[in-house]
Image (cartoon, rainbow, N blue to C red; front, side, top):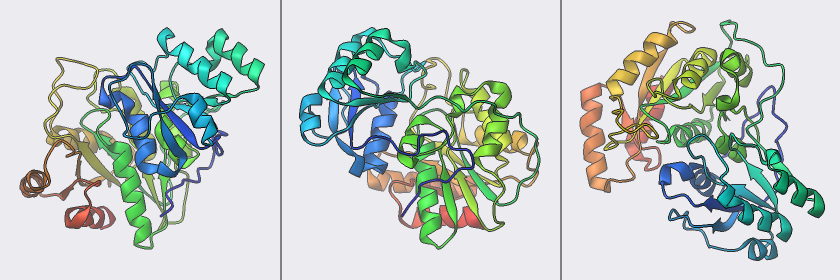
Length: 347
């Protein structure tokens, strides 16, 4: 099923050089390699292999050098890391320069810009290669209006970062389409944009324009059409709550799905801050979301149960579904529980 989105104001990245060699840098935290994992899982036909300079994290794809990747048809090195602050450390530069010299363009979704590194710019110019920064929002974004738009919208929200909001949105968009429903996945982060081909990098947009950008991302549509919007951050994250709130107000979702990873204790990137409960996120999201859509409701909960066995995950989700009075499912496991989540969202 096609989950490519067709947004009203694309950021000019509808075609990226493909296939990709995924770069993992020196990443040791799996949560920071979510871009690489997202591309592996949702655009496997675009990914030839992986390349690292000290990483302990792996996608499981064949390991290859830039020269080997070029020989197999790769056209771009994609930085598959979304680390704290979105930085490109100096230790990565030799590997990035090697990729350019071997004939690969570089695609990055970091806050740091490839073009801000003179050594990369010089090598790219010398070899006729592209430096493509995805996290570049369009100019002249409007502020939010709060005007009610036609069509239906679903937004994934989370108890924390990097726990499945993108995967859940992609899975729900695919499930809606499989039921014959007109639905689009709306990408709001660098990985989603790489998968879908277009979108808006919400966490690179000035706060005053977050809600306006979200309105552009999901414009007026046919009353039966669904926009399934990729969430960002968490309303209770000490660093990233601002982007979550702007996206919530501008999206005006009719339905939210709360994403959670059972067993995670500390907020990612903020040790000492306890992950809020699902109940807290439901309550806070509905309270704040009613500001721009009084009819907002929670359609259910999506668990990232990758650390659990199948039987243990099924038992936990059934028990918590009864406790919350809402469907609880792992979109990546699918099955009857996920079908119930889909039907609840569409009800």
